[in-house]
Image (cartoon, rainbow, N blue to C red; front, side, top):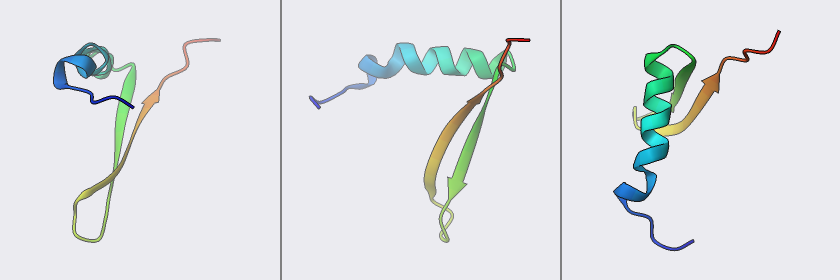
Length: 49
Protein backbone atom coordinates (compact mmCIF):
# COMPACT_ATOMS: atom_id res chain seq x y z
CA UNK A 1 0.00 0.00 0.00
CA UNK A 2 1.18 3.53 -0.66
CA UNK A 3 1.78 5.80 2.32
CA UNK A 4 -1.44 7.04 3.90
CA UNK A 5 -1.66 10.39 5.65
CA UNK A 6 -4.05 11.73 8.26
CA UNK A 7 -6.14 13.60 5.70
CA UNK A 8 -6.51 10.40 3.65
CA UNK A 9 -8.33 8.60 6.47
CA UNK A 10 -10.10 11.62 7.98
CA UNK A 11 -13.42 11.18 6.06
CA UNK A 12 -13.77 7.54 7.15
CA UNK A 13 -12.84 8.39 10.74
CA UNK A 14 -15.39 11.21 10.88
CA UNK A 15 -18.10 8.83 9.59
CA UNK A 16 -17.23 6.31 12.32
CA UNK A 17 -17.22 8.98 15.05
CA UNK A 18 -20.61 10.32 13.90
CA UNK A 19 -22.00 6.78 13.89
CA UNK A 20 -20.77 6.30 17.47
CA UNK A 21 -22.19 9.67 18.58
CA UNK A 22 -25.57 8.70 17.11
CA UNK A 23 -25.34 5.34 18.94
CA UNK A 24 -25.46 3.38 15.68
CA UNK A 25 -22.12 1.70 16.38
CA UNK A 26 -19.73 0.89 19.22
CA UNK A 27 -15.96 0.71 19.41
CA UNK A 28 -14.51 -2.43 20.98
CA UNK A 29 -10.88 -2.18 22.13
CA UNK A 30 -8.67 -5.08 23.18
CA UNK A 31 -5.59 -4.51 25.36
CA UNK A 32 -2.47 -6.59 25.88
CA UNK A 33 -0.95 -7.50 29.25
CA UNK A 34 0.76 -4.08 29.47
CA UNK A 35 -2.48 -2.20 28.82
CA UNK A 36 -1.51 -1.16 25.29
CA UNK A 37 -4.13 -1.27 22.54
CA UNK A 38 -3.74 -4.58 20.70
CA UNK A 39 -6.99 -4.75 18.70
CA UNK A 40 -9.94 -2.60 17.67
CA UNK A 41 -13.29 -3.31 16.03
CA UNK A 42 -16.37 -1.27 15.22
CA UNK A 43 -19.65 -3.05 15.96
CA UNK A 44 -22.56 -1.72 13.91
CA UNK A 45 -26.22 -2.24 14.74
CA UNK A 46 -28.26 -3.98 12.05
CA UNK A 47 -31.28 -1.82 11.16
CA UNK A 48 -32.97 -4.49 9.03
CA UNK A 49 -36.07 -6.08 10.61
